[in-house]
Length: 436
Image (cartoon, rainbow, N blue to C red; front, side, top):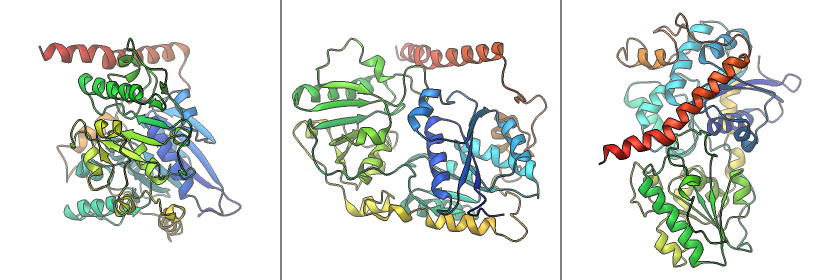
């Protein structure tokens, strides 16, 4: 039954990283009817990027319950619990596996509306990621630009495109920029994996430090996503915290953590390679620069910003350049700087209400990929999540019927530590040896 003023909307969010938890939880809140309460249960998929307590606090989204689960345990819980809405905030392969697992768990019985989408800018693996998300009742597009592209991909392979629903990024907000602060503050929004080489990351760090030296009257901040040892949506092999060690930095340069919105409250110029933080800044009309120093390339993601009016280099910034965004480009990207953000989720809310009221309930989930359409691809995706070709858990699949004991917790922490050490220490050494 649909939620009412007396019965809160029951929502579950499954996420596999801090960023996706933020996106999923905030999306769930924005999808709830204005006159309905919401009970939000969070599930964190166990893996290398499972958020730490600090990362969850920084995200700042509260849930009525929050626990770590394996994929199989989550599927079992979904077969036992009754929800109105389920948000899958996962990487594409995880979404596809859960869709097949949920189809098996629910069969033709009652089920919630299933929603998925993307955390931010979609600049790579468009077809792959979209087809892995096909089968959800709503596939959210963060802008008109993305909605058009998503429908074109689905229609191009003969898949049903009706699930594509235009919304906006759920974490936009904050007070509009009204003028320069004292001191004038420049913020570089770092990304875990862009760029990925030591040379390029060191170059960007050196230019940021040099900008601080050339402008001692400015405050120059390096905004970091995670502390060493923590993981985000993407693997960070070379944290800026380590690259800055031993460098002579001026007094007006420093590293900061915290909620991006709070940092933007005091920002006069946001600089990045291709971070979604650029869209947050543009929404608030904070002057924003997307760097061209390393080229405008698909691998960097900054090609997405062609036509934005925001592309510039450090040389231009050092000389005092102030970007002026293209209003038409901003409008098509779902940034909603024109004040329309308040209605961005109305269509999605209406569609969810219609689906919840559908006579006879919802039909079984129907992903595009099946053992018949993708026999050489789908089974491997499902197997990585310990599911068979029919979506049923494989024998011996890991599941947690109870909280792990002390020994199991120690082993898990050690395993994660070893993995992160391998990513941040061993892998770069091996890569450098391979370049000799």
